[in-house]
Structure formats: structure tokens, C-alpha cells
Image 1 (cartoon, rainbow over the protein chains, first blue to last red):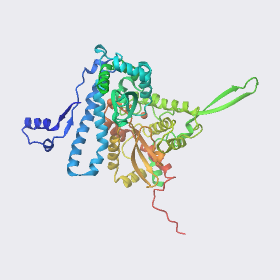
Image 2: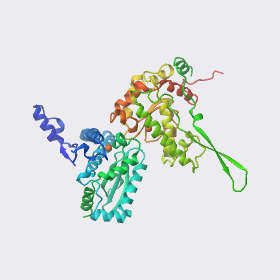
Image 3: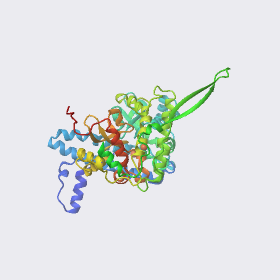
Image 4: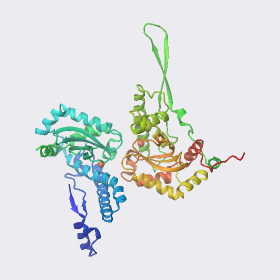
Length: 232
Length: 260
Ligand SMILES: [Fe+2]
Ligand SMILES: [Fe+2]
């Protein structure tokens, strides 16, 4: 995940402007930055339109990043002051916006243009583990499609690895809750955004079509690497 | 009551329906032939029908596009109706009114399977009637007085409504409700399908904050959507009628002490 410190960014900005060093720079709150996509906005067409990708990245993800950073700065100020009610009050904004940043950062890596190997089913260890835990790769897709379609409101459907039990499972989380809220041992191998903003411009109310098409651009190689690192 | 009625007098068109429920039950007659006997049985089964917004689908342009209403009403709302009817075919809730179903089905925060569809059918119907072409502006008469009493001013109410709508994380609804106990108007947000009916509040108007409600027209700009709703779409006419009905359950006046 792209991490950089507010200190360096603000210091650079301050230096460039010849202005005074901002207060936050002295403390160096570690903020996050919007990661670049590893492909062009239009590279996932026709499965996901370029317009959706652009808005999703430049507007939605960027807003989670901005609001998360804002909440972190407010948290830092509240902690410094010892303002307990303010610290507690910030938790929902941190969970929502921080979760939004975490989830989308994973999501972008889960996708890949078809020309670069997107949609190629998992091989080796992850492939075998899927067969063992779900019966077959097709059975896993069916399960994720069904759980994703049934999710009420906004949220995510995940292929999760319990790194202690070394077992795969399908999980859903509401809104921007990251997978870790479902269990401390759960590692996200694959997360699919089922917020309406992820598909509405193209698929309208038909979420199941979005879900069945997204498999064409899933980066199973990445999921396999995460899996192998986690079980190693 | 008199105050609301006087506000009503200056408003142009009559409501689509002050008692929507009467239009909600659609009857289907199913004829069955039983075994070898020639006697015909007639069984009446009632399911919910999709109610129509009280205006043309393009009447809310440019603040809500025809395409948005077509999909939102014709697909999303319809899907909730179909989903509910499918469940009711084998449900203990068959024959309940929607309000009863929503109250019972909420099950103290552990919603039963029928709850989501039932609440969304109700919420959407209520939403279509919360809007009108040439809506927005400021309410008048008793509604305005009540808003001023409970929010300080109409401007305060408008700001609180927008702020509250923007603070909802994820999908859901923002509502103007009448609180029974406190006997005052209040702005509340609910997640996903949740209806304030389950908490005993009386809904006065609502705005859909699911992304499907605004994404085609406003993309991620929920603020613009909410602002246009309150400035140009909300039907203060409907609000007035609903306040009049609500007053049958909540006494909003000063305590009336009988003299003798
Ligand atoms: Fe998203
Ligand atoms: Fe809706």
C-alpha cells in the first residue's frame, strides 16, 4: 500500500512555496496516497468500462483517501489534546474511509486486462486449494456470484484465506468494512466491489451480469501470490 | 390541524392518494379443478402490485432524469415487489399489510427474510410520492411553523437535511419523521432498507440515498443530488397531507387542559 508521510509532502510543498512549515509536518502523521492503477482506465473493457474505472479511481477512491487523511489529522490533534470523546467520535470515519482505501487498493490489483492474462484461472497451490475447499473453481465462482448478488446495500464479497487454519472461504462485508473485521486471521486474496458505483453506468440494476463478467478480468496470478506468501 | 388545512387550501392539485394502501392490493382469481369432481373452486390470492408515481416519468427533469426514474421505478422498485410476492407465496406474513409486515419483520433488529423487500416496496412508494414536478421551495402554514419550532428555521432544517444525507455511510435513506414521544419533527438516516416505522416514528418524507437513485444523473456527487431534491423536487404538498394524518396520532399543540 502506498504510504508516505504528510511531513515530506507538506515540507516539499512548503519549501516550494517558501512558506512556513505546517504544524502537522513537525509531528509527521503518516498519511496515505492514491495508488496509480497498473493499467489504463479503458484496459478492462468490455468487462468494465473506462468511464467506470476513471470515476471509481479518481473520484471514489480519491475521496476515501482524502477523508481518511483528514480523519487521521483530526485524530492526531485529538490524541495530542487528550480529547477522548473526539478520538472515539472519529472511529467511524476512520473505519469507513480507511476501509475504502484498503479495499480499493486491493481491488485494483485483483483486476488485469485480458491481454495481460486477466481471467486466466488459478494454477498450482491456489488452484488445488480452491478445488479442495469448494469442490471446483466453477463452484467457487458460483458461490461468490450468489453471495455478491444477495448482499443488501453496499459492500464487498471476498475470497478469504484463514492463515491459521489454512482454509479458504467466501465472506461478505458491509459498506467499506475491510475483511479483517470478519476475523483477524483472514487474508484477502480477492475482493469484489459490489457497491452500485462499481457497475451502475454499465450494468444498471443487473448486478449478476457485472459479477459474471468480472471474472474475465480477474488477476488470479496476484491472488495466487498472496496465497503462497500467506501459507508459506 | 387547522393550520395544516389552511396550508392545504392554497395548494393546487389534489394528492395522488392520501391512503396509498388501498391501491396496493391486487387480486388474482385462480380457478382450480379438484380431482375427478366437477365442482370448481375459486381461490382468491392477493399480492402486491407496483404503484405508479403520481407524475410522468420525465416530469422531474432536469433534477431527476427520465432514465433514472424508468430504471429506479421500473426495475429496482419492481424487483422489490416481485421479490416480496415470491416470498409471500410461502410466508407466514401473507395477508399482512406492508406496515404490519415491516414492524413485525424487523424483529427487533434481526430482520426476517421478507423484511428487506417489504420495507423497500414501502420506502420507494413513499419516495415517489415525496416528490412532485415544480417541488421544493419552502413549505407554508402549519408545516413551516412546525419546522421553525423544531429546527429553529427552515434554513436550519434544510442544512441539517443535507448534512445528514451526506453523513450516511453506504446505502440507505434520509427521512423527515415525526417522533411520537418527543412530539417533534426530526431528520434521521437509516441504513439500506431500514424503515423508521419499526422504531415507532411516523415518516413524513424520505429521500433514497442508494447510489442507483442518483448515479446516472450525478455520479458520485451526492451533495448536488440532495440539494436539488430539497430545492426543486420535494413535495411540501404531500408533506402537508402526511402531517395532517400524523396529527391524528401525535398531539403537536400545547397541552389542552379541559376546564370543566
Ligand atoms: Fe468502490
Ligand atoms: Fe431506490
